[in-house]
Amino acid sequence: MEFVKSKSFAACGIVFIVVTWVHYWGIPGAQLGEAQSVTAGILLIASILWITEWVPLFVVSFLILALQIIWLYPLLTHSDFIQSEAIFFAPFFSDIILLFLGGFVLSILMQKYGLDLRFAHWILLKTNGAPALTLLGIILACSFLSMWISNTATTAMMLTVVLPLLKDIPQAHPFRKALVLAIPFGCNLGGIGTPIGTPPNAIALSYLNKTDIAMTFGKWMLLTLPFLLIFLLLLWQTLLKLFPAGTLQLKVPKPTTEAFTNKHWAALVIFIATALGWFLSGYIGFSPGTVALLPIIFSFWFGLLKTSDFRSLPWDVLYIVAGGLALGVALKASGLGELIVNAIPLNHSPIVLLVVFSAVALVLSTVMSNTATAGLVIPLVINLKMADDQLLSLVIALALVCSMAMALPVSTPPNAIAFSSRAISSRDMLLTGSLLSLIGLVLLSMLGPVYWQFILSRV
Image (cartoon, rainbow, N blue to C red; front, side, top):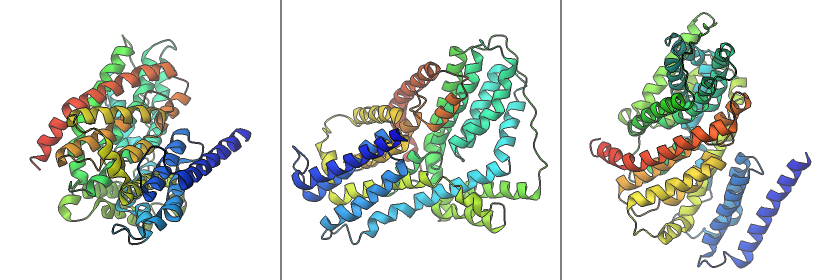
């Protein structure tokens, strides 16, 4: 309790010091206008609190909103960009937030009726106990489920499926670690496949759609799925090499699930209809957020989910994303974002910029929330004076890199859950996660721009 209080008081001290300093003396050494100085102060406060996590991350989002309305808005009342303070409220229920809300409802729907568990068992039963195939099945199950539902929930569920496999494996056998590590890493990677898979994707999609780059649900999948498949195969082979199975043979437990009722069929129909709606949203004239109303309305209308299920949604994640979007609004409205970008030496090639920004995002996401990292970095780069295809390459690379930073137990919630099983050590995670993160950064830097420009030229 005393430790919690000390962190809370430290956070209060940071806010007081930054606000007071900026109000009276501005930003030292920077030639900024008053509104730009205030925005820089808000950015600094958000960065410190995001990195330290002295207060919950969703509280930081509300603090950003409060500072924007109370401190920044009075300085922007004469701006052509700002008509009212409503521009800062808008990100908190934007199309992207609605998209994520629909994804969360779909996640609870699949978990409540065991559709995710059935799929996971089906994958494992198809492998017939062959270690390499079982490992691949676990990776594919984790990644597919994480494309549509919370990777944290997927990790917790898959651990309950996989841990019984470890009972018949000798305690010192290295393949035990491969089976456990496959779960968080497969879940982390799976999130890059769809805009709802992980919050950095939603942040990237939101900012891209505010430019001249039209990004649909289907186009995102087209641009990211090949890399997801490459990363999953890379994960599979890396785990097999680092933790070989040898002559081991596994016994896969049979699923113990209830009978498939009409409600199960209804949940499956809602899932398929929503997924198809998201994939075809660019062709049917509805935004992904509008399609996300489908699972929200029908799941509760027909009693598949209850009010208690709605209350249990991870609302904190929604507001963490919204805080990052609101910060981007402030950077644009005050002109600070453009000023920061103009200060970056752009005489380097776009590839060099992509590598530099991606490396920074990778380091930050390793030690802090990938959502916070995306919310911090993407708003800064979106104002770069680059060709559309180059800007798209940079933003997508940043979103994907944020999800690939998984070297430490604290890097992502799936990592923390898997580490808590005590079946792996932090060294195991550091070795595998660092290797995958670095190889992923190299592959994205080398192949990403080439592939994305090729696809964009044909769609």
